[in-house]
Image: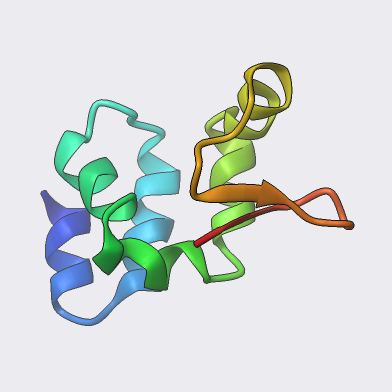
Length: 81
């Protein structure tokens, strides 16, 4: 819950950093927030790419396809709306 609280307190970069350190994909509240319209602010942060790499999402998306919100750009990074 700490990551959600940080986000709600106006600290989206810190919320993403804490989640990266925890390496916990069972944080359903955080993940729901991250992929919600309100989470767009986190998806636009430079820290979002390392988050995707740390959790293996880039490899997963390269193999099986990215979510509808995300497209791969010319640099090879995923940009998510």
